[in-house]
Image (tube, rainbow, N blue to C red; front, side):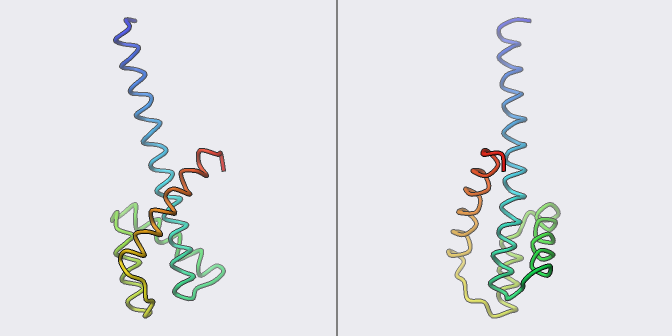
Length: 104
C-alpha cells in the first residue's frame, strides 16, 4: 500500500467517523430539543418522552424539527421567537456533541 493509499484510507475513516458523530449528535440534540419543547408546551412524563421520540423520528423523515416545534408552539400559544428557538437548538447541539465525545 502506498503512502497515498494510506492517506486516502485515513481520510475515508475520518469522514465515516465524523458522519457517525454528526448523526448521533443530531439525534441526541433532537431528543433534548423535544424534551425542552414538551416542557414549554406543558407535557410531562411519558407524554413528554413520546413527544421527543416523535420529534427525532420526524427529523429522520423530514429534516425539519424547527418548523414542527414552531408550529406546535403556535397551536399551544407558547411564546418563543425564532431566534430563541434556534439558540436553544444550537446550545443543545453543542451539549449533545460534548456528551457523545465524553462517552455518555
